Image (cartoon, rainbow, N blue to C red; front, side, top):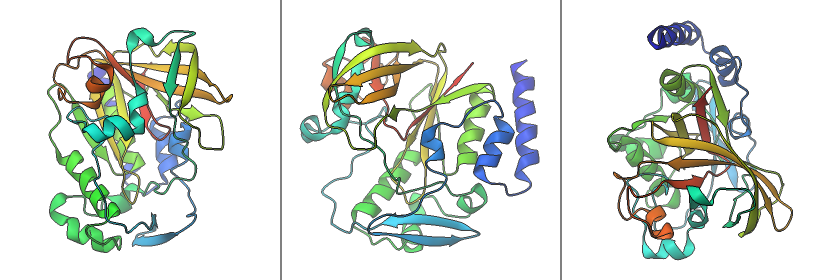
Length: 312
């Protein structure tokens, strides 16, 4: 039955792909019963603000690049990568530290010290797939990519782009299926091929227009999305929207309602990993929680611009 379901999805994807369609139209054609979360709609249309410019990359594709040409001190890989090893400096300064917690602590009334960074106007948006597919995305072609986006080597932008491509090219851990989606259509195809088209797609939402401080939040409710399968897509630092997506069968997803000290309300997506035995022993989560790989489920909240897909 599942095999037939996948064939049906692939047939639909092939029919739609013959003509270039808007990303949101493609979403509706493949996932007609799945509302698009704010994390995705925010990346469909965007006007640059501040010291930013639009760059025409051809075939109707436009990216927004904001200038920051200072030399990077160090650009870290994503703290949500299983192979990620934390440095001592990050244990002091990384805002993602507060996002990690143990599953047993996720219950009504529990108070947690958290920092939800508010996503205002995103600085990168989705390109249509017919445009994204024509742009090189390879560590071997970094000089060409830098030139296309008018990015100088040895800058924060160039280092972030290199880190993103390297993470995407790196081999995942055993039991993990990974894929870097360079378009919304690519993310839809990967997630639907792994989970089917009867999916719920959720993202964290901070109910405020301002940036929120590190503060105490009280859990009002934690709802299990009732599936041991999920595709989690983490937005990467890149001139256009790129998502590092990975699927495992040792993941549980929750939607958690929280109330901050200053009155900020958050509907946060939390992901709990039930098997961490193959993670890097120096991963930020282990160092923050003082636990060892494979001993207890490790959970983390997701920022606003990350997305979780679960079947229903």
